[in-house]
Image (cartoon, helix red, strand yellow):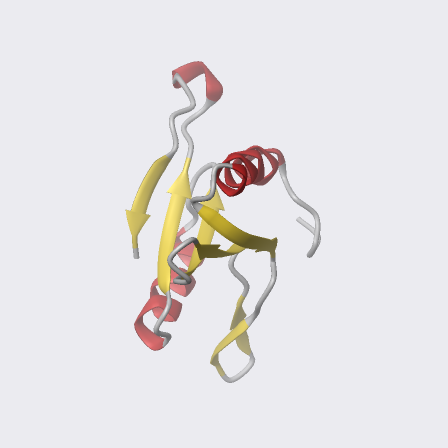
Length: 104
């Protein structure tokens, strides 16, 4: 995917974030809002930066499925930075499309 362009899974997750914002659980969110440098020449851009009602900042990585390199980058970022990074996946819509959350 091109930077700044949401895929269908990310667009669906953004609808959930917007619902959470409307009911007061989330104060603010932004798609690809920050980029973290995790090594020389290697960066990590989470899909969403999310500020909860508590003021806590979380980074949300949304996937339909995981590739090994993406999981590795996400884990390295979680080890290096003081943000809670949450991996969010959704099985295919045929399987019920329930969001699955995993702390990295």
